Image 1 (cartoon, rainbow over the protein chains, first blue to last red):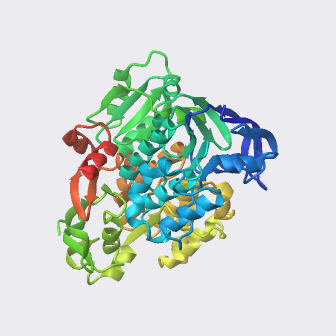
Image 2 (cartoon, rainbow over the protein chains, first blue to last red):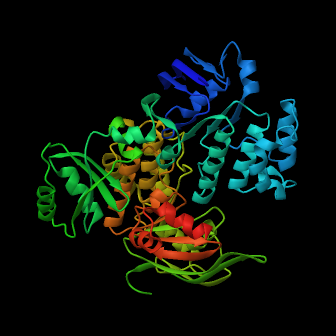
Image 3 (spheres, rainbow over the protein chains, first blue to last red):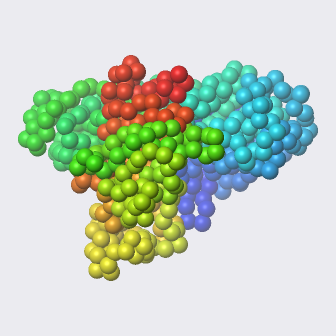
Length: 300
Length: 242
């Protein structure tokens, strides 16, 4: 096991940020912590990277205890915080050199690990970090977190505020790092990224809702979901919310995801009901659950 | 201007020195439409939007927003639009009620009107129990819903939303979209800029900017058909990666 979290709780003045959290991350795994802002993701990252002490429970990272052996952990892990934390007034190259020096190594020594990523920002190596675009800042931050060849990499919302093209490239980079044997714990509020992880933990309000592979999590969804569509979206949502047999009604892009509380649901009944509410062009089709459907069902 | 259009843009261009940030874009948005304005970081979305809301002068081209000309009537445009950003814009150290009163005042509403609006808004959002609490103490999702409602206080013709639901939990997010659908249903035009493609799926029509130009504009359904993919994220990747 690369990360072992046992009954961790943490509260700030009034808020219970983490409530009795336990899970393990296997060596070499790409593990996703999926949850909205305020779920407790950053608090957990700060505890695991020894920047914060839990009120209760214990945790081990790379076989070291997060409290008694914190110094060893700091040498063994890379941490990319959610907020850009490099030196804005140092250049790209200076930042990287600085982090290498702090960890008692050189850029050359571990260049192999960052090469794929660094070549993309190398043309700008004399530019100050503060003047980089969002995507380039993110790549530089990743290089700095990797320069001492960590065993475990912690990435706190690396793709927040990043456009789809850069996001895709970023996940491709993570896959390559994983192949080099690095264990990765990554957090994201974006449910579509969950599918790219080996296993995920769904987290909300400081509690783990479920832990499993993304495939297993959607398989556990208890109901048949229907894509419902009609000529008027707002009226459709209202009509479905008023329907006495509904179990859940969630807008989902051009459709509404609907589940029914009855065992013997017949879509024809629903169609007749919607027609009685003056809706037309009604479509009702079976669809498969997504991670987001599961998350909402569990958080309900 | 077509009576039903609340935004009309023709060959709108913005240059910074030699760099063309927005390159002759043209489009229309109808009353009550939810219009998604997409693009990668640096594609020119923000620059284009700044021209539409009257805080940046175009280099050339035409744009008419809420029946007003962006060159000559920029100040009037500001009175006819609402704006909400993902970067939360209410005052954390004022209460829910105080924030509503403050922004109502800024928008020039009468005291009586502010009182009425404040009461309906608090009731609709179910914020009765926290009306006298500091906004800073509310969960993010509540803040976002409140922020959206505040941007509609002065009954604007168009509301501009900048990545409105980023980071919000999935259930609250849907409640937020229900508010957006409601506003659109009542005739407010909703202009959403985002680079999160799942937000794009909710829009009536979306445009996608690449390097200063609008490279695609249609309903999400037709765009997915056109590019033969199942979601907007893949549409975007095909366009932006070429």
